[in-house]
Length: 66
Image (cartoon, rainbow, N blue to C red; front, side, top):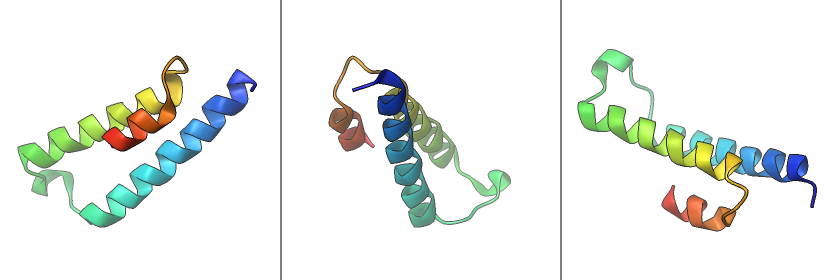
């Protein structure tokens, strides 16, 4: 499959996964976040970015990590 198409599909999967997580966590102001919530958000975002850009590994492994 074309690499551009793979990145687009993986990006959409990552985006909708993050959207679901954001809905589950709920709305909070940045000042109301605990340190754990802040680090958790950065970690989930990093895993989603790796899901999108790392074409050498299987996507489902990163998705399970999310």
